[in-house]
Length: 403
Ligand code: AMP
Image 1 (cartoon, rainbow, N blue to C red):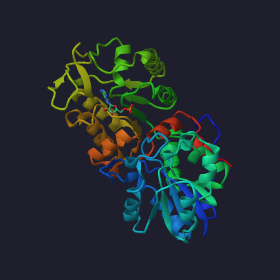
Image 2: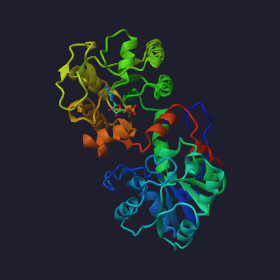
Image 3: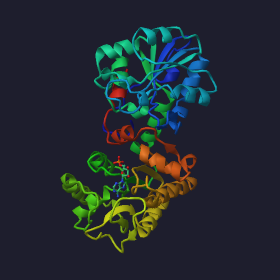
Image 4: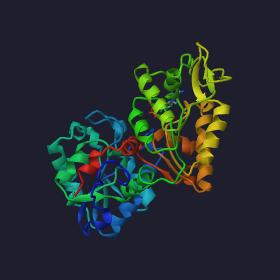
């Protein structure tokens, strides 16, 4: 990756692989939200269409594997991939078969019976403990489904599992078009971003984001910290945060990040006012604080109107923007305004020529809520993977494929 501290990995791309008429095993990330046995958001399915179409047009026999949810190593009906096959078929406009196993004789017979251009979806990889345990034998069983392996599950690349780190030990392979696109956009941020470069981080967990924050401080011109994680930063600054979210173990790290930003002359913006409640429930009475401080019996649940103004102005100035994590408890409509306004400000910045990259399931849900997804430069399908790439980590799923 240009600009990163690590030497770039040499990876084969789908267009470099000979897939003509071959049995091709594709790892996709179809970990899609489901409700009542139906796929409610098919973004991750849509994003794999270019790879699958390329394979079908080359006459490959295509077997797709993915995980869905957290079934803990054994079958659970609610995590079955079965509803995914008709959804993919609808998106592709092509027939898609399904097999209720992912390894074993039944699954192997199904993948081997595929004819040129046919597509098969196998059952959830995580119905077997061998997937998350990166079991060599499980990886070998999976590898029997193909002569060539294509990795297109960007959202799973930061996990060393059998289907990411294991399969490439048995099969030649490379990265699909979705992984290529994701890497290209994140390269722009890590490599040579057009300046000013602004990173916006939110969400609940500071601990998850310390590493990336430290790394971002080497690259950004300004930083916005919002959402639940902002309260640990405010607390570290001596601001009263009432009963808002606080990660006590991370107060020192938060302080160090603010100090480092100051020393490097990087603008680090924290919320200047808040929407606060006495109890986290959608119909709770909302109060807007007058300043940064929150009363002892209150909980901050969203950024306030003055903060929205400040953040929006900062966004309008930037030429490259990376966003991960909501500004408040946006799943509850009354606390979603700050997150939606940030999403809208990003769309506006994109229209004015900025490159905007959004990563993470929650931020993407917010972008959908604000109806601006098509207006951003890139919506990443992998929150964790994109953060780890920004941190400069080598993703196990890519390292395993390196030539
Ligand atoms: P994360 O997984 O760390 O990106 O956190 C995402 C979650 O952060 C979402 O489910 C939000 O509801 C939650 N969140 C955002 N702001 C707050 C807040 N002020 N208090 C509690 N949770 C929050």
